[in-house]
Length: 563
Image (cartoon, rainbow, N blue to C red):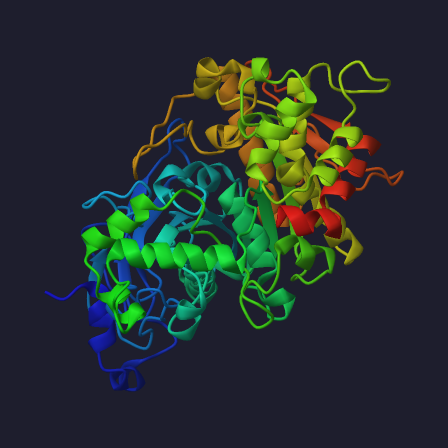
């Protein structure tokens, strides 16, 4: 039997004009509740998240949003399905779709045919209910990760009036971010980002059938997912309408963006690894290459070499995101931006005892940023006073170096976007820092504090770590569960209202606007407390931090960091 997505290509489109109506014909299934999109119908799985008995959620998984990117469609933009077909039968959508191929790559784990998405809806929500929608895009350095690690059951079940959740699978690594002039001539750059956009556009077209409001879509992501938030916001330099109105960016993580010369070197190496260096038609050879050859090339290429790249004025990503943001070249959105207090510790390049002198900071922190000049490093060291210097807020070189590592991109990128949204006239802007460690990771490495991804532990059911396309979840203790419910209430309230306080838990503090009444900047610090209430509290963003962010986000420094 042909795969479902290939059947969609073959069904004659002329039938549509004969039998189409405003309401797709009723289809049912013994498998579960059916949603009929007109061209396809899917049976979902109804369940109740742990500890929640009165808000059942129906899950629909592995829904294709584009044609399989196979054969001649490899290294090309996603191609739209035949959505003028007529649904003749119901497809089983009770489980996840395959993960996109990861790195390290293993034959038999993950798939190239992976352009699917997942939907969670309140079971009692009917088509046209116009519920707010949130779409989650996972992180993982653009070379690993899967939606299976980020279930939205709790987000949907805990919201008092109902929201619809969606997660998107997109191409990673070599298959998602192969670049260079040869690809430009016979393919598309940033295929993984184009996958994300295609998924968002599918959501806008069809989410009403699940009870969602296509005019009230928020997007959310962390790390490379947070970077994706920025790249989706600045797509096409803001010249085209965006299929979303709100953005939640957590620990925005990327960079330095590779130069054209670096991208071309990576392309040439990949061609050699695949075995196409002697081919007269390189792209044809790459598209016909065996899965084993692709896996070999993925594993022989270091992490980070396949990542989003600058395309030029007419492309999806016309310039460095920071430049586009500073220039106001992005679609107006409501915004939540924040980071973990230990993001910098995670990426400082060493342990506390390895930070003793200025040279330790030079060699460890800036190993991630090889394009940064000695002059810029000297200016940064002066901007972050050494421990013991008058007015220094850093008790140790470790605190100094890790703060620097965290602010270069994580803290200062969300600061830049918040400031730019305000400058562009935005009113709904909120900032946070996450100061509650992932308990499992903290017990292994307590010196990292609330390390990178700590927020995910609380927002996604104790999500901790995962191997290749597999995930680990740890049950919450009582105080962890309190913070989890508080955070999900804030996040889903923003999705519904553009204001995280509107639907907050009664015992939670109000999450105040980024711009305080006196003009200062402020953020919510989310902190674990006791078994009934958290220790979350608002704080003022210091003038020193703002000055440091102005430095990192200045054109002169961005030229070197390429963020």
